[in-house]
Every structure is written in C-alpha cells, then in structure tokens.
Length: 201
Image 1 (cartoon, helix red, strand yellow):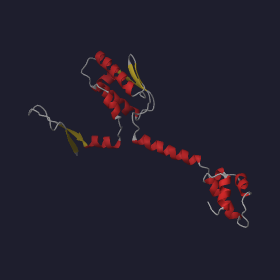
Image 2 (tube, rainbow, N blue to C red; image 1 turned 135 degrees about the horizontal axis):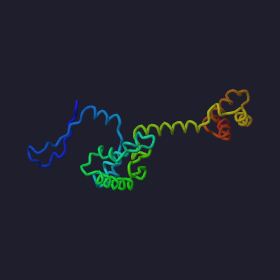
Image 3 (tube, rainbow, N blue to C red; image 1 turned 90 degrees about the vertical axis):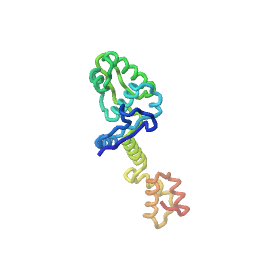
C-alpha cells in the first residue's frame, strides 16, 4: 500500500512538464511512524539554504542513535548528499552549512577535517519519544528513591517518635502510625501531633 501526497494545488502548471504529487511506499510510511525524529521548526526557519537544512536533518537524525564518535569520508558524504558540484566545491558548501547549523544548533558536535567529517554523540535537536520516555522513567525512579521506605527505617527512628506518643494499650496501632508517617515523609513532631489529634497514618 502506498500513499499519495499532493502540493502546489493552486499553482498553475503546464500539462506534460511534471505532476505535483509524490508517492510514498508503505515501508517508508511505516518507518516514519515507528522511528520519528522530531525537528525544531524554529531552527528550520533560521536556516536559509537547502544544504544547511539537509545537514541539520542529517545530524539530528544521526544523533538519535549515535553512541560513539563516527568518521565519514568526504567522498561518502558527497555520494550521500547527491551534490552536483565537484568534490572541492561540495566540501566548501558543506563546511558553510555546518557553520550555519552550529550557530542555531549549538548542541551539535561535528568536526570537518581534511579527509573526514567526524560527528560525536550529541543531544538531538528535540527530544525523541524514546528519550522523553527514558527521562520520565528516570524521574520516577529518582522520586521513588528519594522517599524513605520501610527498609530505610531503623528501630531507633521508630522508637524516638514512639516514646513521645501516649499510646496506652494501643502500642501496635501507635507503631503502625509512626512507621506509616515516617514512610510518607512526615517529621516526628508532625506524627506526634497527628496522633494526639486523632489523625492516623
């Protein structure tokens, strides 16, 4: 299955010169859906040349899966970007594009050397879905780790609060109240006050 996308619908065209549509294969559509790499439209708006846009999209895509530095020969880049210029002119335009991209996308770490272009693991221009999920997962783990747990509490911690509570014959209820209060992050005075006012944790 493929999908047609039309553009320039309102532009006058001479019949027979070209058609204003492109056809995507279902494989390509599935790839875009399953492996999206978002771009920052505010950055795109600041890039004025097609080469700069190509370099920006190429870099932020590479950074989404790059885990170690990678060196690419100029000939490989020349073939990949499909330039109609001769290689020396391509190098010059590519370096200019990299300069433009680095100005608006300072996280990008790329070095244009004599024989190779080397890119280093960097932040994507906009966090990917996977990166956002990972960050949320880390936040949840950090929040969970920050909360005291039953294993974090010692008998000394519990006893220091219990000795200030008038629990009468309700030792087990008072102990449970103290443990729950400490686990919830309350201070000893708050736990004692809650017990004396009839509030139970």
